[in-house]
Image (cartoon, rainbow, N blue to C red; front, top):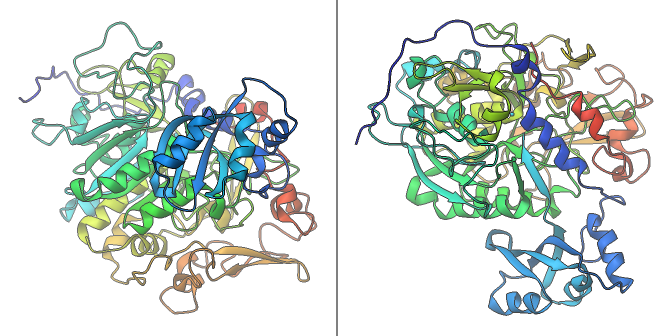
Length: 610
């Protein structure tokens, strides 16, 4: 039956931007940083036998023969997809099976530390990785990306399935129903966290459209609204990018915004399984964690690659560490996983500056910058609006309860909408753009979509800009090079109007790798990466997909990306060795490696900006 709503006078005034909204709406991006800090990675990122480097301390304790009840969460990958025999073996070692992860030929376990040597001895085991914790990463959005041109042409994402892998979706919010308010466009829910439907932070009284079991944290509902909210409770003012999409809710973050690798991998696996049933063509991952190994050895990256190869465009948040400077690195080298994978579309965050024209928009100083740790992949790929974004409020959720100052009035109540900031918000804006493009061209492959969006991105930027933290008064300077803005600012109208196509093959639009030439003191781009494809034709020398076309003359360093004539200066600068490595092993001093930053540094950096 159609839902009965209580209309009230619309609130169409200025967007709320009170002090709480500016200072505290970044709880979720703050929590992402905490996930990275909770991990202490040792060594240089190289595997120790079958074990990932960050398992080395636990392996050492196991070999010392200490008897204890200590356990560790791991992902065990086998040479073949494990069956009951393999599961039985680890269970006899005292392990608890958490997830079956066939997409990466693995299983997720909680296993006694003392049993780790047995995994090393198992001839069928290929590798063992930590099951890393991860967390969420977080008007004028549509105007900045020229979305109205798509709507005017009749494109709203109808028929395209977008899997939101996040904290859940409160599908009873009216903005997520169809245009007649007859049925919800959230067609599927599945929980991978195993957590209770109750929420200790939730208020005792819920209104008529609160389903606490669906989104306890409030982040996933906000993300879903940016992808596909229809603006029903704001007379269209806060509509999402693709208001006709079908949404698939795969919950991997609990009421505190916490999840882990295996939950996300299992959700990606399920999205692939449901691909044909719901026409899932896009996965949105507004979450991430630190990088402990290269992408080719990371099960989380292997999972997103499997989805990409199955024909699903995977859109991932770059991370919110752009303000963190380790030994003068100025936030470079801080892109989070799985945004470090060269196949996926990785998104950084821009600020709308509270205006509709995009000409004055600026990069958010907290948006993570490339190149990626260990592999030096050029990321992000594009940037999209992500600062102080108004989207759906999940009444009674953790975020809504803790930060009432972020609430924004709609037609129904004084908190129908909510403000959040971060690359978590830029990512669904890009995912919505992908849905619009695929509605226009259903046969486009993920690589063709990625290449089209990168080529047509808006590329007019200043050389630099500054931002001031409203709580500390500290000023941050951002430069508009390819490690900061990628190929530019997403432009939906330009993408829909363009007719050129990259090759359809997987790997045709790989993000390039940056190569340091020690003899010349410069860093240049490599055409492709043999780990996935022998050559990435998108970044070749052709007229259509040459570097100057994709990046443009207005984005610093489209040929030589680091040298005496570009923003970063010479290799003698302090931060150079942090990102590129002071020794022959670049992993010795990368930002995510031994040179870890403190939690206190993050607490002062991740805030919404004007």
